[in-house]
Length: 251
Length: 241
Image 1 (cartoon, each protein chain N blue to C red):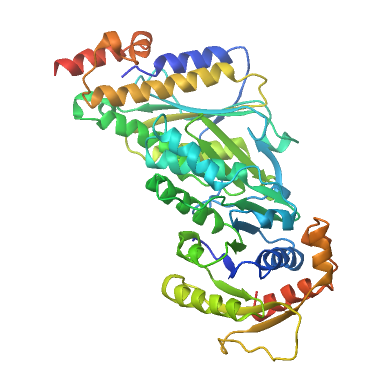
Image 2: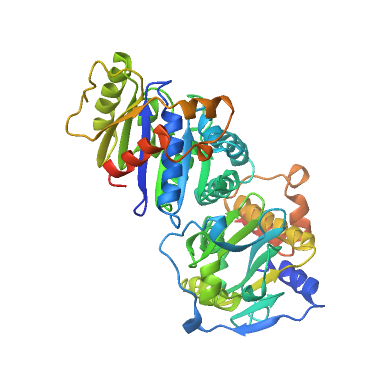
């Protein structure tokens, strides 16, 4: 990516609250840096981040991929035209509100895709992201996202887990892959939705900041009512946790 | 080469009833640029040119006829940027007077086509500060989001035009440049048609200069060949080479 964008990737096992936490990070950043350019990327095909941030998903990157692939056989023949078209459509699909912009990736790239178009789209989204000050990526469950170019220049990798052994194992695997593929500068671990305190939690990566976030009843109610993270009380467990993460990762 | 001359004349004919503000090219007035563009968020934007439901169009016409494009200049039809208060329709049209040898189809293969494309691609390599441009080659559209800070700092079509002209003149085969801005014009359809024609001519040129076998009777490009002066002659000449 170009420029000095701080790119925060939120990854972890499905169901540990990554999306809520990513949304809370976006809200915290908008409140902390009112003038900053902040981009939220929903890399989960289920586009849960959109709901958590209350933004409209007009189109996804997948829709654009399809449209441009069709255009290539007609009018778009030259690389520069295709790149420009991709940028044009990406800006079209970008929603903006409350001090941040939002894009949804949609379905992941499939093997039958026109490879060149995928490559162009990756270039353009990478270039666009580089024009923001902060980029928060909500990755889909598992480690697939770590292989994508949009994740290649992540500056801050946040591994999210719950208290389960499985959740811990997943973040250990993600870190292994990330160490090979992702050029991150800072690592953080967040244990989310803590309900038991009998057994003390230990980070598998003692060198990284370790943030523990209690189970958030207000967030559960918010979810049930379909409200966005912007409607959560500032002193809710989730928002306090997001604040601690920004501080721990020096963001 | 006279392929785009008709489009230059038509464009001027469509604008003949209006009086533009005419600025002579002044390199010292060029508006500042960023290295690779910037993101202007809606909250920081004063307005968009050709954005949303407003029409927009962009095309470039190349000629070696010195009489058609005599001087470097900027022609503004409509309000200056500082006078705008809301999103509006927008067109940016460029006429380029280039050296004859640049368009010499005998220079080999698709040299003339590549040269014209190179000039069209100037639009992708200019990044005025506080002026976020996005271009759709597919629909011949160009939109720009203008930041409030840029308006405060004095951005204008005159200064933007100067920047565009300077960029085109970096190519030693470009002699003169005219940049036309149409702002807030109610209907752009006639200009959209010229944009489509210009694009079709460039594509036809590519086909012809690549020496692709074409049977005029069944060729999709026959319409443009018949309509655009010089196209048929170019085609025949190339086939006989």
